[in-house]
Image 1 (tube, chains in turn green, cyan):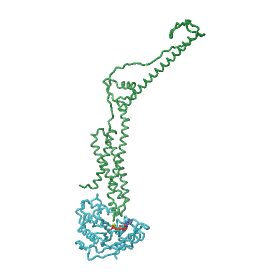
Image 2 (cartoon, helix red, strand yellow):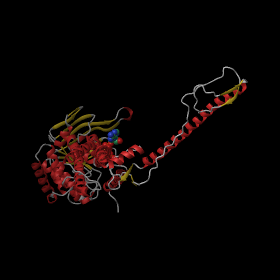
Image 3 (cartoon, chains in turn red, cyan):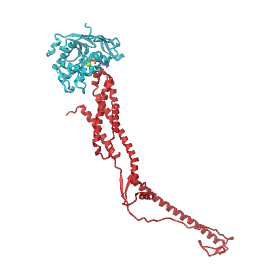
Image 4 (tube, chains in turn yellow, green):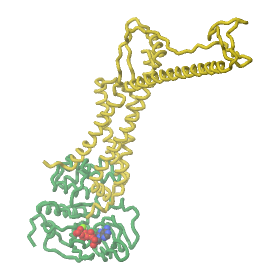
Length: 314
Length: 245
Ligand SMILES: Nc1ncnc2c1ncn2[C@@H]1O[C@H](COP(=O)(O)OP(=O)(O)OP(=O)(O)O)[C@@H](O)[C@H]1O
Ligand SMILES: [Mg+2]
C-alpha cells in the first residue's frame, strides 16, 4: 500500500505530537501539580524521659588571701589546710628561717593553680565535643527530613494537637503545623505554586500548539503553491488569498477547540484531581486559540503572497 | 484584420542584462481573430512559455505592442497599471492540469471568478451552471474536483476560463495528460466556445494528436513565429479522429 503524501504529513505531525504529549503528561504527573507529595508516616510513641543534667564545675574560694612572711625562712609547722576556716589571730604555722621551703611551697601553690586551669580547659573541650555531637545529630536529622518533605503525625486519641505541636517545636526545633494551620498553608502557598506551574505549562503548550498549527498551515500552503499561483493569475486579490489561509487556520483552531472542550467536559469528573471548569476560562481559551491560529498562519500567508502568478504558466 | 482579438506587434522580451542576457522573444507579430483557435508550437526553449506569459500579462515585454480585445496592454514601455484586474476581466486561462481549488465544489470553483469581479454569489453560480449545461457536465455540478475524471475536470477548467466572457483564452498544453479522444474533445469544445462567445484562443501544445485540428498554427523558432496554414481541417471536423500526418 502506498501512503499518499498528505497522510504521510499527518502521520509525521502525529509522530511529533505524540512524544510531546507523552512528555507533557509524564512531567505533569511526576513533577507537576499532579505529583504526589512525598510523606513519611510516623507513629507517636510513649517513652519515659530521663531528665539528666550534665556539667563540669570547679570549686573556688570566694576570697583568696596571699600571706607572706616578712622574712625568708622555712615553714616548720602548718596547722591549717586549704579550705580550712581560720580566725583572726590564729596561728597558722611556724617558720624555720630558711626560705627554701617557703619557695617550694609557693611554687607548689602556683602549680596547683595551673593544674586547675588545665582541668578547666579539659572540661571546655568536653563541652565543645558534646555540642559538636549534638550539631552532627541535628544535621543528619535535618538531612533525613529534607529527603522526606514532611512527616505526618497521627495523634493518639485525646491528645491536644496544639500542645503537642508546641512541645515538638520547643524540643525538636522543627516546623510544626496542626491540621488547621496546614490547611491555611495549602490554600495560600501551595496553590499559588501550583498556579504558577500550571501557568508555565500553559505557556509551553501554547507555544507548542502554535508551532504545530504553523507547521500544518505551512505545509498545506506549500502543497498548494501551484493553485495559489493560478488564483493570482486569474486575478484573485492578495487579500482574498490571505483570508483563505487565515480561514483554514481558524477552522483548524475551531475544530481543535471544540474537540478539546468536549473532551475536557466529558473527562473532568474522572480526573484524579478536581477540575473546575469556568465559563470565563472557556472564553479566554477561545480567544487564545484564535490569536494563536492567526499568528501561526502569518508565515504561510507571507509565502503565499510572494508566489509569482507567472509560476502557473510553463 | 478584425478590430479585436489578440494583436501583438514586434514583441520583444529579454531576460537579464549584459553578456548573460537571453533574448527570448525577438520581435513577434501575431494576430488571432475573435472566434478563432490557433495553435502555438515550437521546440523546447524557443520562447513559447515566455510568449504565453507576456500574453497573460504576468511578465512585462521589453518592447512592442499588445492589445487584448479592445484594450491596449503594452505599448513600447507603457503598460496598463492594474494587470491583476486586467487578467481577471480579459483573459481566461486553461492549464495542463486543471488546477481546481480542491476544497470548493466545481460550481464554486467556476463561480469564484465572477465573484472576484464583484458579481453576486447567486448570479455567479447561475453563470457557472449555464456553462456546465453547454459543456455537458451539469449533472456533476455539486461534485468536488477530485470526484471527476481528468476530461471532466478539464471541462470545468474551460468553464472557469469562459465564465467571465473574456475576449481571450490562453491554453497551456491543455491536452497533455489526456488520451487522443479526450484531447480532441477538449479542442473541439474550445472551438465551439470560441465561436459561441467570440473568443480569441491560443493553444500552446506539444501534442501531435491535436496539431492537425488547428486551422492556423504558429510555429515559433528561436523567438520568432512562422505562420503555417494547416488545411483542410475546419474546426467542426475536429471531433473525428485525426489522421496521422
Ligand atoms: N526567467 C528566466 N530568466 C532567464 N532566462 C529565461 C527565463 N525564462 C526563460 N528563459 C530563457 O528564455 C528562452 C525561452 O524560454 P521558454 O520557457 O519561453 O521556452 P519554451 O518554448 O516554453 O520551452 P519548453 O517547451 O521547454 O517549455 C530559453 O532560452 C530560456 O532559457
Ligand atoms: Mg514552456
